[in-house]
Image (cartoon, rainbow, N blue to C red; front, top):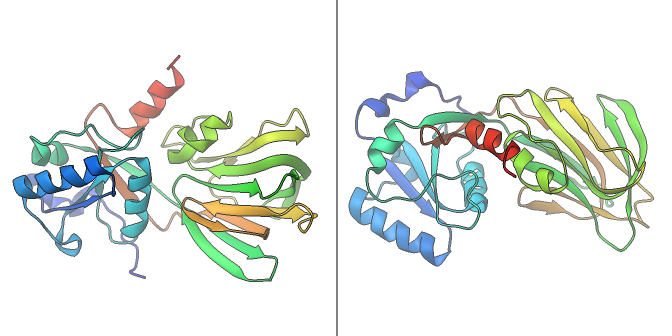
Length: 270
């Protein structure tokens, strides 16, 4: 894999000229139509030659684009041609070059997940939103939770558990009643999904430098799957998760509509 690059204002000289844009789109009809029109207005550029990647679709498309261009150092500017579009900018065809030149930067780091399954096979995957552990059958999952090799919760009985980044704290984590994290907070949200025991445990806020280990208890009777964004591993037995600060990705947002502002608004949205 290409060595990660840390984007910085110093290597964004394109802000003072005409940025070369590469467009990628989901397979939704609205996104494909937008792709055709934007190609006509702004031309086509191969991703490897582009200054900025423009993603057309919803939040799922943004996550796919972040994974696709991991380690390239290229900022991602998304425009919503999907459903929710929390991570995206408003779609407009006009003024795109000026919008990108004046956009604010949101820095994100992925989670690294290492899973050992029932056959002893190890799989690595990355997640920008969250790593979620989910029961595979009608039986509730039983999970042991350790932080930096110290067991913090010997047994959680629940439908599952997730560890979310600040970027992902407003997604599945919020739906599971987890806390919303400011984008700049050096934290991760550990949130149970429909916890049965202990009843009063609502999760934990963890420093983003710790290593979290989850062990499946009674794994054959209560199998679980481990999911990192779009990658799922079945019959997960041992899961280690930590944030990778060596990899930095940049999302670009219109002034006044950056992720920090959106996360703040989300907390006051009745």
